[in-house]
Length: 87
Image (cartoon, rainbow, N blue to C red; front, side, top):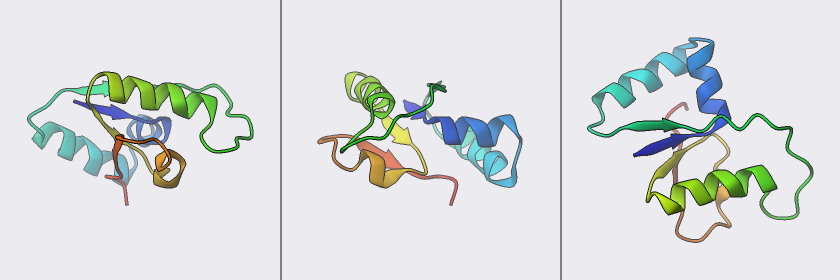
């Protein structure tokens, strides 16, 4: 299973070139794609923001890989698998 961060969902929504590539990769993957579209404005954070922690917890609870451009934001979360399929 993959969970998409808001930036990946935005690329799909606006049908950008990166979004179309992402869609092809998701179609090719032999897994389900779960979309987490948490659009609450993120506040300043010390290490990991509240909304990012919610996303990370969903991924950890479901043993999912998080697709995001914000790899550095999630780096402090132990055990979380992250990847960027847009760049």
